[in-house]
Image (tube, rainbow, N blue to C red; front, top):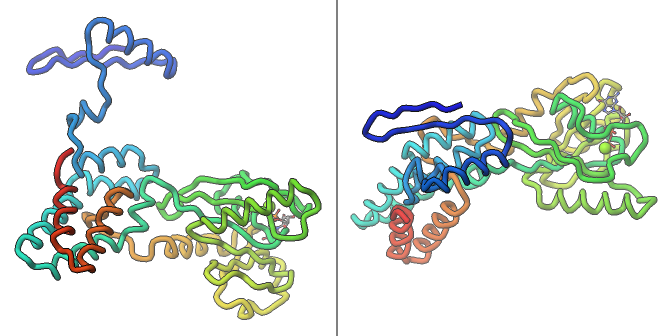
Length: 309
Ligand SMILES: Nc1nc2c(ncn2[C@@H]2O[C@H](COP(=O)(O)OP(=O)(O)O)[C@@H](O)[C@H]2O)c(=O)[nH]1
Ligand SMILES: [Mg+2]
């Protein structure tokens, strides 16, 4: 389908086609052979120069939830850029303390900023048969992980992508820890432990009808199968979420708790949020420079960020 808007100042033609990437590539080739220059959407949309706003627009196209898209849209409309200009002004007025405060306000959202286009990784760990795979299915609301009454079925790390309270999350289903009968299973357990170490949050699932164990210190403890009744005192493991993957009891609340563990202090509409790792790294270097008494270096870092490249 061709849609044309041939009037000045610039004639505009849109081609909409079916057939996948190959057809698009072929069409571009044909048009290029006719003398047209092929450019990316970024160049077409905001020119070849990269600014903080154009970086945010770019990130916006990679947002997977409405909540993260809204935050990125604020940055594309200049929220972050405005604060950085203000920081630069404060440095120029030698108001270093005020500049630091503004930097610290931005850096409150370091973790969130790194997870606007990349999901938070939440590892679901715990003993075999506690109901880890069932819990993931209950949270996701669909059958994704393998659930079976035979202990140790989840041999590989299976991941499920979903939005929890508007945050993009990758739930990692790990093999339970127990004595491994086969090399394959041992590999599954090893993979699971590796995932748990690098995860942003560990959910430690325990069986309400089993024996209380020793959940790792910073994990979010979930006691599952409460539909069968509790055979031990949940106070034995400290704060815990009581759920039933089978009936869905407690799942809504668990999702809220996970969301608050990931983002305890979500930004308000219009807030400046540093939205990508390169920006966050630069701001952290600037902050570290001021801490070492090098305000000039910090100023230069911020100025560099505001310089179109
Ligand atoms: N009654 C009851 N059974 C459950 C619940 N969650 C899991 N199960 C059962 O417990 C067994 C082990 O579950 P699974 O999710 O495979 O455990 P995993 O090894 O931790 O992944 C299966 O038979 C499930 O149907 C629950 O909330 N209530
Ligand atoms: Mg499993």
